[in-house]
Length: 168
Image (cartoon, rainbow, N blue to C red):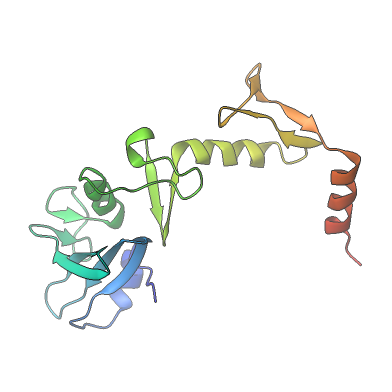
């Protein structure tokens, strides 16, 4: 079971225990939070060859008692960024681009999303009344005069949308 250890308020409410609370990032990588009675720690669980290997992140503390400074006290996102500078293969859960090919990769509970997919989602949200499908070329949206280009829905797509939107 995954815990929302990315939120310091949630971590404060967790019980102290020897076994870490984990949040899965990928099939082979989880970030853990071991809440102690006096000191808490970040832990990393990697799966290789069918076995789990657990390592305590040395030299840093979670941002429970003090604000994150990016060096000795890390928040969840800073810890993920630290992992991304290693040889770990983290990728966007939507477009599958590795972290080395995107500008930013934001971690969520069990998923990542890159800055390019966030921009694409913003296009969809800003143009929600468009009467078509966003035109894509080479995995990127086609823009004309800074606006996304949509191809009109076919009659079959419009009929399917009417069925989905029907509120009987």
